[in-house]
Image 1 (tube, rainbow over the protein chains, first blue to last red):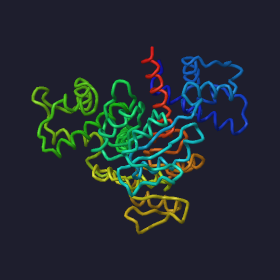
Image 2: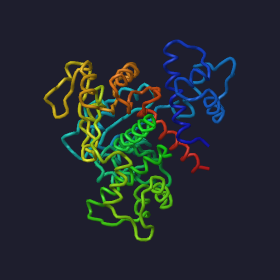
Image 3: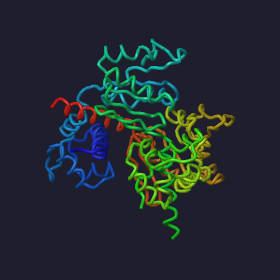
Image 4: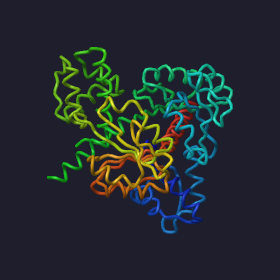
Length: 209
Length: 209
């Protein structure tokens, strides 16, 4: 069974492969992908074997074939649509993030309780929160992003789940509980920075000794 | 030795403690923190014992004391200053993020090569990239955030390290290599979404069976 780290590595291999493809590379070796993803070549081969991704260790992998196989695993063989609830600074930055669309991820709409943020004419339209349910059902959306303040996050989570959303990335600085049949990833900027502060300080202390 | 997950949990306990303190709680039990951080109470006690954080299992912990002890571990007993290189959508959202300052993290300045983004008068000033070195050295900054496009990220990393920055959060969608005496955390939005897509699809398939 794949774990989170393994899927993160697959994403990184894929990222590297896309770049190599753009450079007209036809073949790639596990050592190349290892360098790009900052892991060992043995780890690359182990990850591939877990998903039945085949290649020739000596002869390398065909970039095109490998990309197709990884895309299938990551569900990137078709467009995956996300909606964003909370169009503040973070929500807006995500809606304008240029990296998603070329990679079969599309942020299709934003929702906010603040009527001044609505814009049905924008490239990615912003709707009223009351329109979320119909939009998600009409468009068969499975994925959502929460970027509302902490006090509103739990309520938005429940609302999203009622509409049928099953995978959620949460930017609100509160740890949301994962309901049984849903996937939630809590991403807290402050926690990320605290992690860096702690490990940088530890590294400095170790050097002094 | 603490690992990344452990520090993430400490951040979460701290987050919960701040909220409890605001509600005038004096005491808290490991079970309370476990609920808030979505872990077991045994895990909470194990984490605390790893850092020599003491309390009375039956009598609970004093919120104020516990906060102080966690703050010391996380380096939050003093203000930690970050600079941001790349003031695009993500960089700007971070500079405007309200959650940091109250938690002893301050984003003190932004840097960008685009002169049209400069603003020395803003609450958080935006400077020319050429000013980075002097600013970091004059202000003794140890931490930085990279939010530039992927092709510029490696160069910005090297520049940051030359100035003396030792802890970096990277939002550019490329996996930067961690130099020996530095700490780098690569945070890729696309990878986060791919993770959610994968595990949501796996969960759905499991249910069908």
